[in-house]
Image 1 (tube, rainbow, N blue to C red):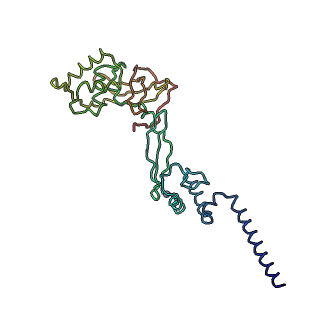
Image 2 (cartoon, rainbow, N blue to C red):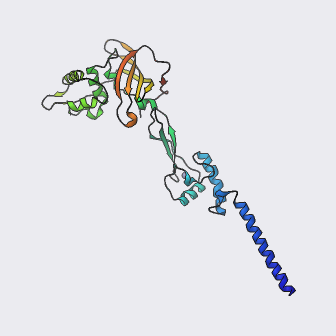
Image 3 (cartoon, protein in one colour):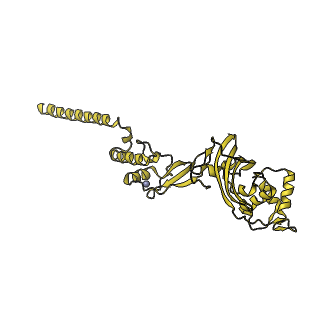
Length: 288
Ligand SMILES: [Zn+2]
């Protein structure tokens, strides 16, 4: 009987001990919920993920890599274990989408080991992407006026899709109407000008040939007038057959490039100096 009691006591003690152990386990687990899903091994994975993700800057410290919104769509397990086994080997940042003045673009880089991607907002070249049009230098006269011969010059320089191949005059004129505002009188004069150069009267087609550059034509900045109306400021430094030129233009445009359409020139005037309240282009901007 004594022996039975002592065995029973021993069993009770063991049970009590196990119960206590379970209780203490639960206490340990609950404060660190991120360690719960995959038990012991995750404690290790978890630590690696934290430093890893902190270094890359995309992930919240307690989130495993699969939760990152920019991750492609690898299997959760695969991606998780990859991330725990390597430091990402990021490639160069490359442009994914262009920046415009009214919306940032995006840069992307890819890990060469696990193909995970990371993105960041892009602002480079936003002003040039939005407004720069090198063809304007051909469209504008030295006193700032838009001329029919200038618009024809614009077509030759900027409408590359028609270069060096016979194109119906009407096709070119209709395309130019997306870039400029002109009335029927201007249009008639434009067609008359076009027919003096590389024109085939039998087919009513013209072959456009590109113009040579005659100087530096750069965008300096812009002002937002409201809606999709902007004032843009250009500097032309160059020469014509008579003299050296140093001109400043204020060109008002309807901004459509953010919607994949050409900007339309609304008006142009020569100015003496750039406005102090314009938003200036960044150093070295170019069109992408
Ligand atoms: Zn990686």
